[in-house]
Image (tube, rainbow, N blue to C red; front, side, top):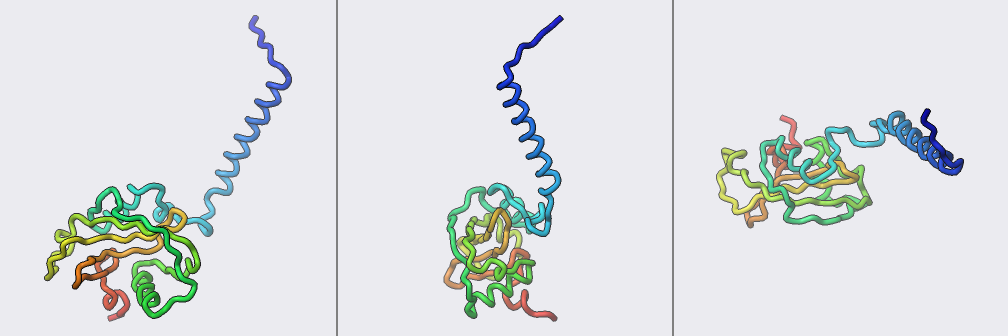
Length: 168
């Protein structure tokens, strides 16, 4: 016969710990999937490599490490420039007005294959970048751009402001 001797205090601690684990798992199962509050799994990111994959879905290859990470605050009141920029974002399913007054992060990545993606490009650009704006592990906006003097900016799917905001 095998006997185990356990002190009452140790038994109570084990019981409380087990109850805590059960409560935590129950909460994750029953309350964790509220899609009206959190981003959908397809929009959520948990690390930088998730951003690389999402931008890769548009055909762009970006460097694994961002060239810049910056925390910015979305303004409460949008001026004309922000309104136009937001119209372009809306065309690709984003809306920055939902994040007015919020602190967000901007990740800027170097695009390494822009010439391969945009075949009818008439100009030569030294460097092309992808800006990705993130709030609470969710991509909320972004664009592809060149910082050259005669540079450009367009949505992830290649539409400039005019193309993104015109319905023809």
